[in-house]
Length: 146
Length: 129
Image (cartoon, rainbow over all chains, first blue to last red; front, side, top):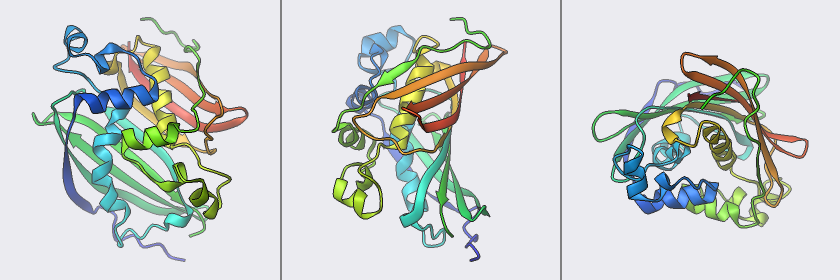
């Protein structure tokens, strides 16, 4: 069956997320990270951060909302019943701190078929309130039996 | 912090309890029912609820960040492949080996395992030294 590929290159409206101190702490506790720079304002400032700083993988919290409309777009037409999250990459720039307003835009990079599976690759690009690049994510979803 | 090619990073061992996927769902905002509802998970052909892949990637990031002193600024890039499904209430072991050191950066090859099951493979972390 031929895959729908017209969504390649499509971009979706960006989302903005304000990072909060307690949300950073909640995430760090679930992952089991104990570094006080994720919980304590003074410790974060002593380490040279503007405010309590997020663990790098906190990026999923502020970047995922931009990806949701891409995943569910009928032009992308992913079959969720047989979809798995196959791969993920993040490249970090400026750290995300409490009080930051981070704007994320999502784009479809690739849709292709390989070995009977469909590969759907999306990019999210997150920028803070000062225009600094915070993180770029590459999200690969694999659909079996296309 | 000094890392040399061939060094093993400190092994991380974590056993997520039964309710960890609920807490991770709340912390991350990912409430996909395959992670928190056993009936739903079984209805879509899974053996039971499974761990969030991005939770396990969070553990891989934690282990790699710890290898350079835990400063979040040190983590520059992390790429992973999700393969085997992760199960709650089963120990996860994260292991990594330094593959290259160049220009103040190290690349660490990392895996996450539950027993023989590689839940994350071909993970590559680039950290600042």
